[in-house]
Length: 183
Image (cartoon, rainbow, N blue to C red):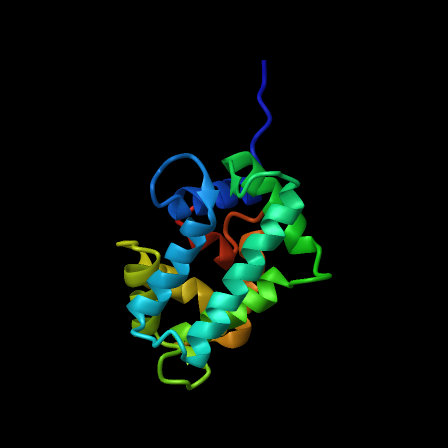
């Protein structure tokens, strides 16, 4: 008997779920999303009234509500399977929120600490360490793959492209497949 291989997008979304499930109860709820937004705000020492913090917080709230809407659940929490389905639907339904563009820009703005419109290797390492809480031994390799043009920095375009790939690409070697570890 053969088993169907799980697609790469599902694997990436399941890893995202596992990373976000802060209390490890097998569900995501608003507190998990708030904790993620707070990790960015704390890691980058942003005042809650800072434009970057407000933008990230607003995106996070709308994204969470879109996930609930697309999951079609009556509760305010999602299982891993519901999360995967809801993300797949929310990413392609841009009628209320463009997850890849809106989220990508909000996150990029926070990571770009010196506002030069690119993410340096140090800024990327900080993101991995302080937000994703990753001690990725291949961080330099990850950075190099995201820096598509090889200029030593991740441009806004390169970052948004990677976010799109995270949600939409079944290519395990696509730069966006690296955000939560190798697939």
